Image 1 (cartoon, rainbow, N blue to C red):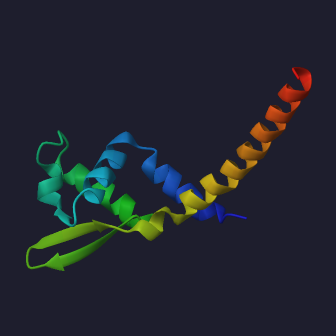
Image 2 (spheres, rainbow, N blue to C red):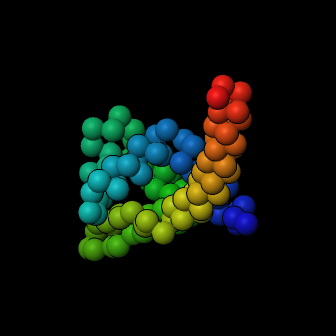
Length: 109
């Protein structure tokens, strides 16, 4: 079964809409700095830094320091617990829908 602490961390982290928006901006960039993330976001640099800290702790982003800048990039492996969870329940629902389809065909031949 799926490791619950990992899925909990990913879901809790991505459950915040601002944090999810930060993550999406990182995903669409190869690498991005805090300053670039702050620009146009309507969120303070301090808040962006806190969101990045949460994303990093959940394994969703990695950082690379270079001089005075720190560059952030998405870590696709961090989403594995979520993908595993969705796959598990995807199979569950596909089986249920197949059963429902069979039942409906039996009811209305």
